[in-house]
Image (cartoon, rainbow, N blue to C red):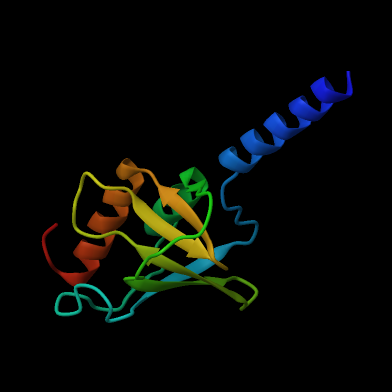
Length: 135
């Protein structure tokens, strides 16, 4: 009986860890993407989003992002900074690349999150429209 209870506990712990996403509980008023210069530096420009529809799209991508297991090896394209209504900020590393068939990567405190292709493409489009270039 103990083995069954322990097995159920471990399985639920694994499933819970695999299905949780990033939670934003405060009101975001601005999202700033600062180019790191690590990737695509010739095309990369800092961009800021303060319109409701762009912020909602970014929040949706984060809500659908799934945590990755283990250590990650990556190069961040952007430092993404959220500014909240109360003036506080929260930062993430964001990597999208240019391949529209690839997922995106969001990193917070060494924890990586996979952004699904659909949301990654929406973010690519938002960034490209602000930078004035085609995706």
